[in-house]
Length: 372
Ligand code: G6P
Image 1: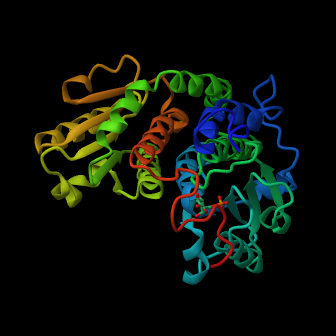
Image 2: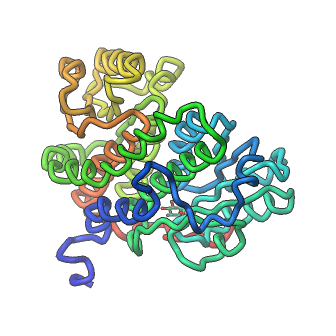
């Protein structure tokens, strides 16, 4: 097993490091030189895709967080309303579905029973189902109308890492493809996003090369009972994912919040020294978003929080309010989760290791949950 781990202590560590390759492989052959998106495995006609008037993304766990990120991009580019729903809730609330609804089921394993039951329900209601999946020939893609495989390679660690980033890549491809097929308002933007997507593997590699600060900090935080995570826009699901990783691996109380919601309740949790991980968007582009989160960081710090800020290279505005700054390369807002998630994965892996847990096989969890 040591050899299979490629010299690493954990499969998770190895899989975190494989992320640039996994994202590269998922994009490979799907972005043409001219900036169009080629999705040959998607067996829905362009007309089917033009008829879509509503999208639901259904998934569980980490895949659900990928769906939450995807919603921002898909709605922005396609102008089709997009809802994200926990697969385990979906069919029990009688969602409104018909043949012009596209349901995107995201699943690394392709065998998660909650997601499978949600997709069966969608098909019964005549919706079209597109699977985003990492496992060839598994049940979810077999039962779907179309599939876009993530080419992440096998993921062994129970906690999902490279699958998450490849799911993001696949969701973005679907969003861009839908936008192109339907004739889009943001043609120039789509072309530039294609270019930016190509740069993501290298950006992820840059983050991975500079994580010693995060590792040291993780060891220092390993004796705490609570860690909170805040973010806005796509940084919000990233905050949720950071908290989920810490729960799964370190068995710590960890929660993610939309930073704007803090003042409506969660800020009461903050006490002297409470670690708060803040996911900060690029100051370029959506500047308002950046300024809002900087003031959220100020607010939590004023109440005693120890702030750990994940911010873009060159973002000096966060420095006065940050106890620790973890730098990520400059990345457009919508693509930022490719880089901001990575330090949070490392944080959870390191804290769990410092606490003496089995990172690859956390208690009470299974890699693939085949019961409802
Ligand atoms: C399990 C795993 C999670 C995973 C979720 C969904 O709960 O422990 O890491 O995110 O299932 O799995 P899937 O294979 O459908 O992506």
